[in-house]
Amino acid sequence: MIDYEIIEECRRGNFRNFRELVRKTSPFAFSVAFRMLGDEALAEDVVQETMVTLWQKIIKIRSAEGFRKWFYKTVVNKCYDELRKRQKAREYNPDESEWAIISNHLSHELSTELENRETAAIIDLLTRSLSPKQKTVFVLCDLEEMTPDEASAITGMSKTNVKANLHYARKKISEMIIKYI
Amino acid sequence: MNSDEIKYTRILNILRKSKPVFHSADDIEDKVMKRIMRKEEKQEPSPGILNFLFGWVYIGWVRRGLVAASIILVIAFVYQQTVILKRINNLNRQAVFIESQIITGSSDNSDAAFLYRLAGRKLPAGKINISEKQVKRLMKSYNELEAKYKDLIKLIEEDPHLRKYVEEKLDESSKKKFNM
Image (tube, rainbow over all chains, first blue to last red):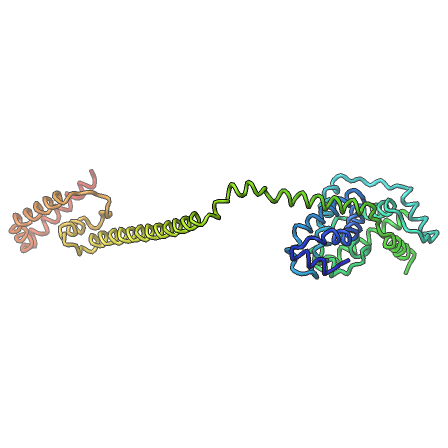
């Protein structure tokens, strides 16, 4: 993901390779945003906003090493805002067809990957009862496979808080799985 | 590992394996670059306006003149401040001096100091305005009265009975005044 040379160039004010930086980093931003929001269009908006913020603030990033943390932090914060906005008007209506997709994958050990639409539906169903914090930690640690230290640096939560939120997230998701699959 | 944990792990693996596909990467890339370009254009006002507004700063004699003017203004400001501060300090000292003169009686105007002591230090400084002429008249009449009744005072002080009688009478009169 990180091409330190490009970042260093952009940090020095040379934006000739910024397009290259966008090409290399945007899939990572999209992955996190899509898994958190479960909506392709919204995730794309977040990616766009993140890239514009990146262009505005890259000079202020202290080091190329700190870029990864800063980048994910920006994405997560933008998603977090979206999640908080949406949290107010949510109702839980279990959709049989989406649970059927999971059951199908579990029972037949399908090797094919899920489509975006299916991934979004499953994550949305599993994480419906989670708070934005819990969902963020779950996506970062369990889906994006980050360590609690990395998640703590990105979310600004303490390591203990991250672990506690992750524990509750896993517990709630397990309950959902037991209940519906 | 029980069956629920296995299910959880398998679902997690499916989700991990199924990385979201970023279909419109190129589209987003273009949009981002366009937005950036637009912002950059907005940030840079046209050179014509800049020249019109600030072009004069490049004229040598205007720059030197402005520098000189600003230095003169700063010096004038500092000078003015010093003068004002000096005056304020001076006035402050004068006010303290006058008050201390009245309280300690160390002034050349001993009449004023005496009057202040006579009033039992009850006159707050600066609250009553009496002219110097009035003070002098008051002091003169007090001194005349003292000289006129000097013998009488001496007589009363020498005779204890008379002194006692006078004191009783003065007490009575003061009580009457108080009752009134």
